[in-house]
Length: 493
Image (cartoon, rainbow, N blue to C red):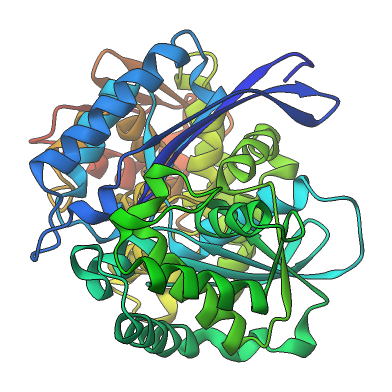
């Protein structure tokens, strides 16, 4: 990416959707435009944890407005990230599928730990360079993230299911602000946060920072009342709670610095901030400017080059954790990627990188089972916390691992209808077959070409006679692809 490149991040939060557009200048991203809409999707989950039609429509309408501003942006210059509400929603695929089409870019749901990592990146990028140990707290609509880190590196991350929208709906019914409601909300918040609080005690950090909407709203109210700008202290929180109690209802709240869109969820937000201060023994918290959306922007830069892509580090960590045979995994990966790039259209390097990750991880299930390791490997990837990856990206890798051996009927027809995925899978299965002896295979003259929906593997003269088992496995591959939209032909000499 050259200086002057425009990058964009869309944050689909539980309370608000945000669009951040920045311009790249010497590896720094400077804001060009910022749009925010209060969608309050977190309040649109019904008792069965389905998003209501009205909540989905509010989200789609907002994404349509964002799409108009993003028209003309290249695909890899935009990242759209969805968080806790869509992690919880049972009908999230309905919203994501249509929302991605409306926005014009894929929407990726991230795990709680990945959300926390992106938040820390966003906060750290907008703070002065320092060697201080940082605690970053982000109180969102349905989740709260806690992160410890130094400079640009987070060391401990946690995501807890407690947020301003959920807590306001649960404890401040119909907007009533009572002492009993605050006591109930703070006690409940402490109970949830206490499960993850052990690593965040006072001796583990030097400075506490608060990110995003709730902390920003509290800081703005306290500053408007004469407090120090950008700083929240315990006595200020006590004062603010008393003001809310005096109002007795959100409709009667008249506080300078309190925006209308924040009024309905201020009770839940303040109760969680107070719970965090008490549990972590915080005296004061600085209001940070960075947030998840800035972290997503800088993540776009890191993903541009393989050597800076955090996902590669996560793949290596998974390989080590599950004692993968590195030599074999690397042979399969290199061969699969070579075959894929020879057959794929120009500009397929990113897809090849993802194929390489799947190839390196295709045996992570072997520690659990020898015969069904591909099933276990797929399960691990679908449930792993892997820094840098969105949940759909991990699922895509899991499908490649699941499909790399055996029959293909275990995959969905929609997966095999995707030509990129189908080619990745053909190349992975071909590479696994050729590397069956777990040593460097003789693949001189081996080519893989795609002609429409027909994949043809060819060899040099005499190769099949020299390597009869490899030739047999490739010919058997033709049977595996029967009853799929694809044909696999082993034209071996």
